[in-house]
Length: 573
Ligand SMILES: Nc1nc2c(ncn2[C@@H]2O[C@H](COP(=O)(O)OP(=O)(O)OP(=O)(O)O)[C@@H](O)[C@H]2O)c(=O)[nH]1
Image (cartoon, rainbow, N blue to C red; front, side):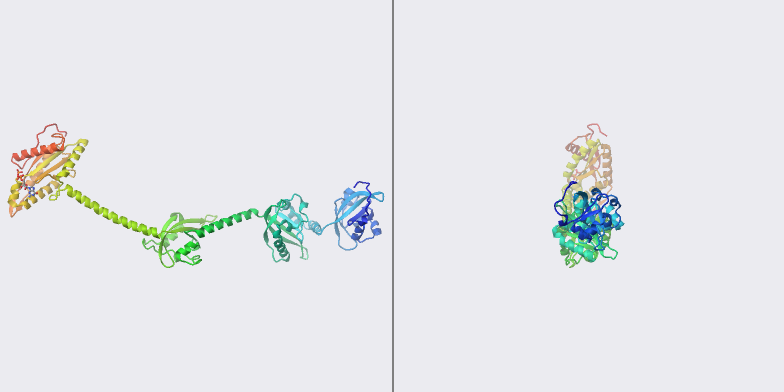
């Protein structure tokens, strides 16, 4: 309105409280019917007053000088005549022409109950006033109908509002999704009647329309007579917590589904060995009813004291598992069903620690390996059997090999073995640059002995020579029965001279043996021919042949003597 505006509508017909006062001294010039009603005064009474006389309490800032600017948007308390109650009003002032004179038109806007409460609240309660100023929470003062009187800055931004006034007069219930309102009102009513004091969770709605989780916690602000005056409300955005809770719940559901559908036994034990949890499969496997195992000690239910096949003390094992579960990451042990049946289970164990690192549970996952164990057992048995059979076969082979290489009468190696050995030993001596000699032995007049005392006597002599040669040769020497009464000794490392000496020793020893056949004393002798590798020849046949030649020479010379083949090359020794 401009300064010189004349109004055409009668102020009395307007449903608002209007006063016209003179600028400067505040003399009331006019009041409309609505204003007269509010004050309970006649127009004459009202116009006899100056504006300050209508005020309750001190309002120094507007008492000195009255102008539209000084009055506009001031909140004041008035004292009407009609009641003892004082009225809070907000003034909206402007200049205009009244009966051709410039004056101030003041609209008196009555404060709502909630504004009144807030005004009183702020003036009277320093604690809450400060609380609202400093609290980082979304805090609200609401009236007893749920209308917001004031809020902290975070209270506004939580709901997506920018200014304090945006939320004023809004019901807290209108900030929730519609389907939550009934429950919230019930909660609120319970708070007021004192039957429900706690906090509750709701789905709230932001200015943008976005939903979010909210926790509301109501506290009653009481008057001196203990009647509720208003509500202090703290609202918390719990969306993040709810998200985590939902995720946890989902994970828990997944875990539970996994655990309950698993075809493995899953068991949690406390550090003293009591069963804290066991899945359905484990209950069925061990033959217990649902819930029957929980609370029981493993040693009283599924773990026997002693393992039957190994005699292992299983109570000791349980103790050790809790002492250091890492040593029992995997353990296969005997368990026992409710019906007493023994079963084998492969358990894999893991420790569960609390935040302080203390072991609080052992979680074990088990699989029935009874059949595998049985199969393993049978396999081991079969393996043992095979091992035995193999040993037998090996012995038999050894025996057969022995039989194939040994002479049954004297147990000396036979001619075939000699041929193999001689070739091998010659090669070795060649490699190692050591000498090798052979001695060929033939019993003298053996035919006569046989003829005189029988074949058995001859055999006895043959066995005696064999024993003599075996007892007086080195390990690496090889003694063979070469023919009927012929023997060959292969002497690796022996020079011609050493071989001769050895043969001489055998000859002399044999000569001194006393035989008695049919009660008649008998003395036997043999002759020897000696040849040496390289000196006389460098192949087996030649070596044997030359030894035989030397032997022939011994026989020709009269027998019972050792002859070495005449040297044909320089000795390597
Ligand atoms: N008892 C017995 N006699 C055997 C065995 N093998 C061969 N003889 C006998 O040995 C004798 C060998 O006779 P001869 O070859 O004439 O040789 P010798 O009688 O010893 O005559 P010299 O060698 O010239 O001294 C034969 O009578 C064979 O029967 C045997 O395994 N046991």
